[in-house]
Length: 444
Image 1 (cartoon, rainbow, N blue to C red):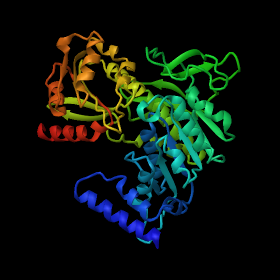
Image 2 (image 1 turned 180 degrees about the vertical axis):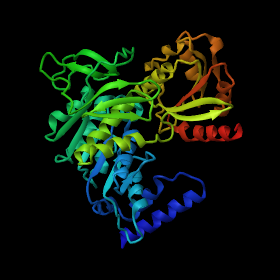
Image 3 (image 1 turned 45 degrees about the vertical axis):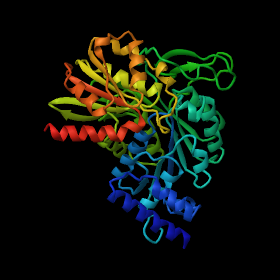
């Protein structure tokens, strides 16, 4: 009876939030947990096939939704927190959304993005059959602390899932090291040197097994690449799912397991996300044809290289929340050979992390490129961002500070560049998207 009451109350809360025009993606879960604390255990027991958990600093929302697209493309019913509400209440809310009024969940799979720090709490109530880990970088240091703390959180979670299959990014030594302690692991990666040669902060310089400094044959980005430890022998594992014949002209494409994938996404990092989704689906026994078709039908979520047209100009909108993801976004900006105006939005609300010192770890110096015609800083910490840009030796006449996000967008749209790129951190995501949608409609 408690389970049914919790489902009813949560569904009413969700309906109320929709009427008020609010997202409310986790509130129904919070209400359900107060009424029935073990509701996640009860509802997840109805899943017919696999439960997959997706963890990692960057790319977990995209990877989670690529998996969702593949599964639905294969005809399966899937419980998924696809909007990225990834703590305990958000995962519960996803199950509530698929539950009947009698408290039953009729689904083949559950595909669940989980916050790295909360995974150890969520796994008290649910045991995934498969766990995908995308990468590990420093993120929100006032919340997570140093990367070692995040790794310990993940190890604690994995101790509750000893029989689960791990799908790990073998190109990331921090992620790959987790496979040393787990008996059931497959790896994905990219064996060819993509020649990116980016100047950026590297995490995981030292071997997780013995502490010796790792040697690299090449880097892809961040600490991802072909590495080895000359002291203890730890090295990049040979990928079970190896991306090859990479192309990145406009959208990206790659080969894996003899199949060719044209991915409707920009950015090399999305190949890693797609390889993770491919590996999971293959291990579920889904046909290669269905996997490839699903990946090619994938549509990005909010702020994942979304495109808008305002006053006849293409505006590309992307989310970035830490040094690694900002460096990826800047690389995407510079991959565009046309001239462009750039907007960078920085907030420091709790979900963003209150400490913005990480801005000095981002390679904003790349924006000195001649193709960048202007840089506009906005958000709560717009002035901090402006100072950071000035220290990059970007000419001051190219730098503008705008408190209003709408004014920042229009400043860029009215600039001399042929394209506009907008990069914001988390709490600016949905409000900026709404502004872009309004402006697109206004200037049709």
